[in-house]
Amino acid sequence: MKDTKKTIKENNIIEAAESVFRAVGFKNAKMEDIASEAGITKVTLYSYFQSKENLYLAITYRALQSLNDAYYNSLDNNKNKKGIDSVVALIETFMTFCEENFLYSETLLEYFSLVRSTSSGQDQTKLTEATKESLYYMKLQDIQNLPFKLTAKEISRGQADGSILPHIDPIFSTLQGWSFIIGYTKLLNANGSNKSPLFNVDLNDLKIFNLKLARTLMSSESTLAKIDAMNVHS
Image (cartoon, rainbow, N blue to C red; front, side, top):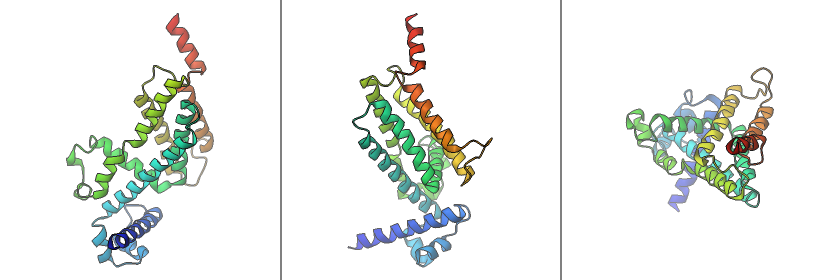
């Protein structure tokens, strides 16, 4: 019973922190503001989360869990379709997730930037003490590769059913797809509610173009694939 009450209180604090971070950003957020939003004292807040960094990592963990759940839903919805359709659906799932969850997409971008800069956490010198001590940082490390693995698995399934080019590397192609999404997400985050950030280009048009490009680059039925096959047999 105590564990249940503790979990409820912790989730309420995380939700309060999300509200504050959305409003003022991580740098400007203060622990007393989060405590006030949660309806608790600052002392109580620190008894659950010893630092603002740990709270941010808790939100990041929630974000990655939500993304993974969205991936599983997409996989289930496309399990009877060809691999190429499922892979493109996963890319669209991530892009839509970023559109609908500004704070979550921001935390994920920062987390994966941290992963890269620390060699997947091996270089401890680049981690703050608060991050090193965070339980949520450890939890994130346990699930951080799941979106990549799920995508790569679907690419392999597409190669098996003949809908995806047989010679492309699943992991390389997965990372290529993520580079599309990261660029798109950075435009979203920098642009806010404005839908025409650069040269009056609608971001939805850019999203559609990226999805078509991903399909074209991977599909065994694309014009590029046919040209590639001709070159191989010439």
